[in-house]
Length: 450
Ligand code: LLP
Image (cartoon, rainbow, N blue to C red):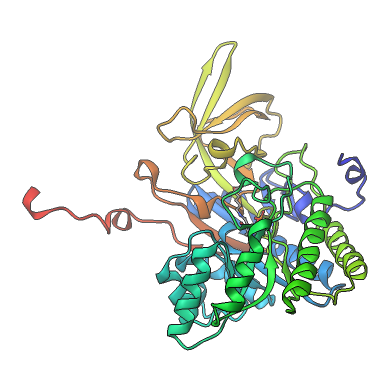
């Protein structure tokens, strides 16, 4: 199905496993953007999350360029993929807005000096506290997921004497071929209004909820998508629905948000389209559908998360114990695992890796990379061919920029790693390593137990 992609001449950022400018330097060590990864691990300790700013900016620029052919595009970074103050600021400086789903994501933006004028609030169960916080801070719009939220947002806006802009999130009934847990567009989903319920929502908005201003529709079909046609299908559903609602209710909806989902290359078999391919498909579909339905071109929102940050990120670990079960398997344990990258244990996600230090002349072997957490399921990579590993070697796991730090935990009370941003030989810490004091700062030891 993805055969046509195989013949691409130049791969784009999300189609590469490694960040731009990855090579072996004269010492035989892996070097990315002018930074020797062995030195980096020595100075900043492991485990360590690393983001390459050059690759990150290239991907952001590619998104901008690809969608520049459709002027009415607004790019929102889906901050659930990776929310930190510096990363947010980089995207904000690019002119991007944000898709947020919690008070914590909003707070991070505000504390980085980023206002909410380009922010969309998503999610299927926003609390009253979150809704009020977002309205108080002048959020641009909510993507309303259900009937309860319509009421809560209207009540809250009314109390504050405001009229709040909203989109309605619909479930377009589109299946894409990705992991069950990260599909969202199919009918049986916890997200959004299914199409038969949309009219009742419209009636309520128009008759009762005077503090809501509905301007468009939103959908998101899933994540780590390797298909293009699902986007045309989605756009066709959204625009047909807009046309139908405009006609039936005599209103003028003219915004669509098509969500995120573009895939990345974790392992050689992955074959995602580039953002240019997707942009062309999306734009063509909008134009075709608008011509067919006699609609004005809508304002288009896109919400990429993974594809904007994944390929610029990687993780460094130090190899510790090694266990060989003769004739069966060789386990190589690292100093991190499922708490800093839960994706393999949650979604059977696959990763590519390399030993960063000089391994010239080492023989190759098939290894299983085990985490250090107390669970048999804490396996980061099963059966990967690597240079023969030794205790003290530095392992570089690629494509950990998305949904790793943001989904990390303190399981086993292990400290969360630091994150550094590298750029042509320069290194800056953007998240400090957690400390033991921080780990227990919210614990309360009861006086009566002392
Ligand atoms: N918009 C909405 C409404 C979403 O729910 C999501 C992701 C995105 C945009 C961004 O999708 P992306 O471009 O990143 O595919 N933790 C999972 C992925 C969960 C995605 C949740 N929603 C993973 O690690 O694979």
